Image (cartoon, rainbow, N blue to C red; front, side, top):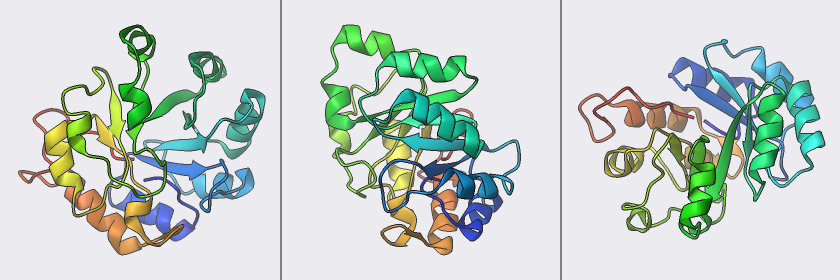
Length: 212
């Protein structure tokens, strides 16, 4: 559950079973300060992953902000090299590397091998824009390791897309908003219920995927 900025949205995500909550530190209507994120993280139990989202920012700045905020995970949402992930990991953070669907599909076999051991996120072309991509684009070429599906997910479509693409987890921000940057507590609850629905379209025949 990404792009959170209020105590109420954090509490709602945690109460309804989100495995991770995300805070945006890149330029965005959802951007928060490290101070605010730090305050919000005090509400999050240690069993829930806390993620800081960055986009093409200097790695020293990323590390400093993530440390000040107290997040456990750094999500790189631009064109950051694998060396940035290694640096963050060496500093004690877990990592995620996001790819736009077109960017991911354009990777050569050699490049995919470089990223194969990392936790990945496949997003729409416009990250955070609420745009859904055609699942046929990636249906036969999803990542082989641990990966999150993002991009235009909503309470109404997430179950079908989980069943169709079988990601390790899903990531949502705009799909649970009343307006851009303003979360709906009702849609947060509905999204998590739809993604986890036992026996429904969101069910996968393996351990329940993490919901972010």
